[in-house]
Amino acid sequence: MLKIGFGYDVHPFAENRRLILGGVVINHPKGYGLLGHSDGDVFFHALIDSLLGMCGLGSIGEYFPESKEFENISSSILLEKTIDLINKRYIVKINNIDVVIISKSVNISSITGQIKNNTSCILNLEVSRINLKGKSGNGLGVGGNDQGIEVYCTILGEIDEI
Image 1 (cartoon, rainbow, N blue to C red):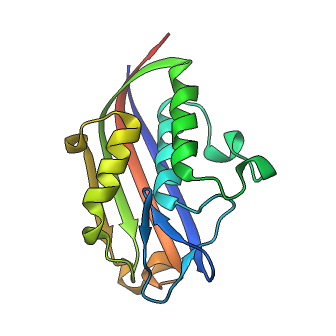
Image 2: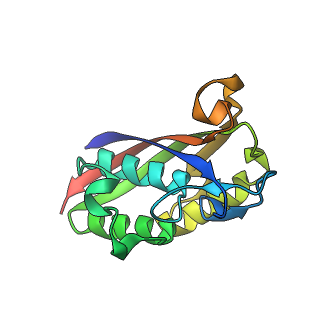
């Protein structure tokens, strides 16, 4: 069955945190990172939510609550755990992933290739099936006002129950 998943996440900037997007560590112009219980990787969080949504399995918070177990955990590990969870119930073939990252201060185009490669490796998916673009937000919203980063993710995939 052909299904679509949609994910969204937003995290505010914070001092004394690393800035990680799609597993890529970035130097923010002001030295900021993203606030979050895990490593704050909004890219992987939105991707996880879209995968779970595509499979009708709820949201990231249901599987990875704010607990000691997941405190400061790498979001790439959360993504791997999500894939394992999905693969226990479904056979999934991802057709494509389309992502928008909204940030006024982070140059997304300079890290697009790295994010796509990281995502491709974790999902065992051809890089050509992943599209990623950055937007400035034009002074609107959390990303556009440079208060944090917002990510929207859509996935189209074929799903069959095991």
